[in-house]
Image 1 (cartoon, rainbow, N blue to C red):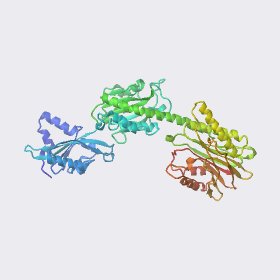
Image 2: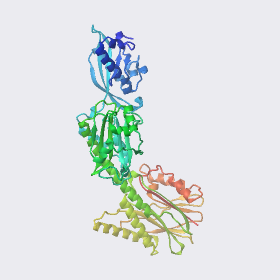
Image 3: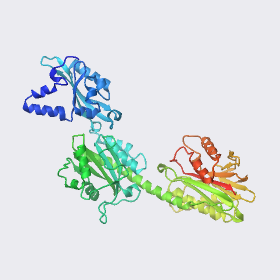
Image 4: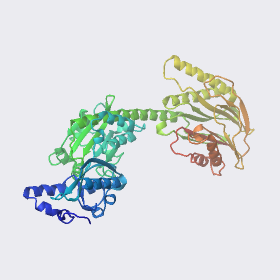
Length: 580
């Protein structure tokens, strides 16, 4: 090992302290042992001869793995470049400050962290180099210093990437840790999570505090051990706590110093008090999350490892970030409400049970689109006709949301009305096309929200006496025929235009359904995928329909089970029918 003053050796650091004088000795002990400043000393051979516990907390490298090793082996992050910095300081004597480097979560077992290092050479009285001292601090917000607009702009890009309330709340928590706070929670009212209307202010209602759920949480520590509740769990809010004060007044609360011993509300919340003591929570900032005049919940920011208490400038920055997030949360809440209403409307219009009577055995499945893409306008129907015949209908309205669901309901009603006239399938679709065009024109004249501007449909009539099915298509994918032996074909049928265009009249075709065969109707969501050609989807469905199952219900489940995802971007509807 290279030349090093013995007072700086790993076993003799205390010598410096003991000979520094009584006052200086206590100060030096505090600096070396209990300071939040990470310290390490390297000898002239670039071997680590001493390091304190703060450095271990910062980069996750334990003392036993650091002592006696070179920087590239004893430091985390840009260890090779840090060694070059230490070597340069040892050779030139010039100090290096503000050397930032990144320590990954995989190394620390916690979150990614940016550290700032300074290096200075230690010289003997005669000027002879003894080694290099390394000083390390956590970088909390230097990358945003003086650039509040950059923070808010970055928040707008990273918060609200989905239309999901819980995901948006988690994005707010993730964004603000660690650059602004060491521990963050976002709690929202149950009404917000369900897409319902929150109150102007939240306070005790009829002696009962409104229900809150944890929607987002983040920490500099892995697994967020500071949080008493996981995301989605109900959060206890003491009536006399600062959280309730913010919720009831709608105004922020800044507490630069937390005094667990004298904050009286903590005596009624021992679990939170214990977490405050355990993790050294010393500064608190609570902000109401409100948008468009309504209060959605509360965001709580806490500092533990960052020794700087929150101040008014921190509050202003946090308010701007939370305001951006609140708009995204409210958009997600409104979207959830509309999707829930559209889904309820759609399900109320779809038949709860399909019954083919004495003509056919039927089964159906409907899978709504993923929440991100909202409810579509798929529908299906099965109803009897005079002479023991059976009508089979499936369709898809262009668009998503309440308008698509409402348009689907109108078309379903129109088909049933036209079917009472006992029209052939091709003529019924022609009349339905004209009805749809009038519907669009009427909506435009009244300046009400226009219905979806297009729809596809299949109308089929099964005649059990002849085992034939007369089918007409309006821009819809053709049905699949499954022969008794298991062979599956997609017959080539006349393709009419989608409804709402008013172009050529529709044509129909007659299909034979021998005993034991079945016919499968479906919407494009079953076979189309943005990442695959439609032929891939058709072959996937063909393979599933060719399986041997004991019932149509099992076959429905088998076909739906072949979807590449359980959260499709479009509605999926399947209707199977087999002659009796």
